[in-house]
Structure formats: structure tokens, C-alpha cells
Length: 36
Image 1 (spheres, rainbow, N blue to C red):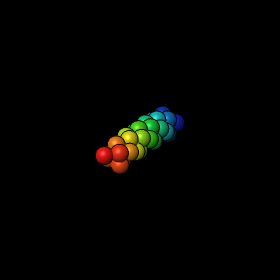
Image 2: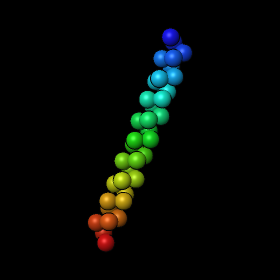
Image 3: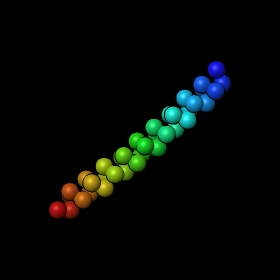
Image 4: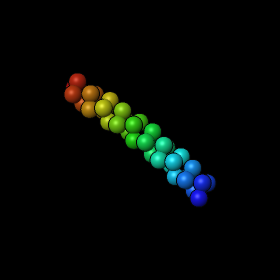
């Protein structure tokens, strides 16, 4: 159970980091479009 819990937490952390990178990329794209 402990190993499975650790794996789940690691997956959640990875997903959260990916989402933050995605949001940051989206913001940069939006800013780029607004400057045109």
C-alpha cells in the first residue's frame, strides 16, 4: 500500500508541474497574441 501511495503522490506532483508549465506557456502565447 505504501509503495502504491508513493507512486500516486509522485504522479500527482508530476501532473501538477506539467499543468503549471502548460499554464505558463499559455500565458506567454496570450501575451504574444495581444502584442500583435
